[in-house]
Image (cartoon, rainbow, N blue to C red; front, top):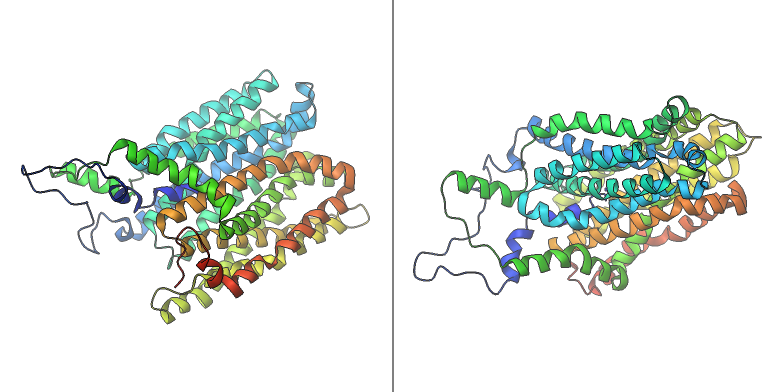
Length: 494
């Protein structure tokens, strides 16, 4: 989502699992009976977010989703202003693009530091601590008088914005059963991808008529407005909810795990194991590379679209931004396709297999997306020229956006099906790490790529890579159980 990303590290099993990893928990001895772990008071416990009224559950979904949208929107709304930034600070376009690349680096780094906060203080505290600081650094970037200040402030803005993206995914997991709540899953997808897609549309007109600084002021305005509904959201993270209830009742809390053991486990989940899984685990390697490439191409288009539509068709900044509506429409259509296949394929499989269908059932969406993404790329590559009407390359964004969201959703849900909770948290963190590293590089690469190869062959190169990766979901569909059996990280093989 960043992404479901490492927000999944804070899923409800993690704090309870600390005691399993700790050999030095304090004992009450003969003084009193050892207090057991806190848990819900039956399946109908009103404190359980799964039992909240529908209106409250959707409020608790849409507010974190809006924060996720804001932070991802901030990644791309700056892009239309890079030419003015380059002129004002007398730097190259590549240097001006560091404002987006370093922001994306921050999005990848931020969740690594937010995971411990979320484990101890819950979701809401992470939002309230990080979002105001995110807005302050955005203000710093808007007030920057040199490129160094702008880039540094953008990086720290990403660092403090990234936790909102990651933890929002955890909020969704708290409130919904992902096996039966496909519509909630699509909220996360739309929040993660609609922000980057709409950013250039808004930023284009702001940069054209008000100047590049307004591409940052709009983030501050929207973020300040979101602090109000955020104040009224309730905590949804199970351990924190149960702890607060126990304290309000004057009940004894279970012993805390050893702090060193807890920190070691969190470090393992959020950094050490994700890196090792990227290096040694074939399932994570394949899924991460495919989903990260799809995500990175979207960020490459932030530079490709201005080059294409301004050079070939003479569009102004605002008009160029509107061309991203094709991708935005594709994202919505992709979510609709996901919901349809979820109802027609996954829900019946849940009934057929008594709630535990084969993990490969989740791959249907990516199998559809594996066709759509290269179609969109090649369509754009060979119609983005003066001789062809501008609507054609705009429409090419529809199959690309559709394929992008289908591949992303599949990557997250397949990982959640394949691994036990704590391992899945590390695997999703690995996906997020690679995704943001590639997204950092692609805007910079695209400038040089289009300069050397031109629009047609530059975009075709992305298309050929997408074609080469297209067999990945089909291979997992065919040989998934055998691949899972070779896992070194306790992949579920039933």
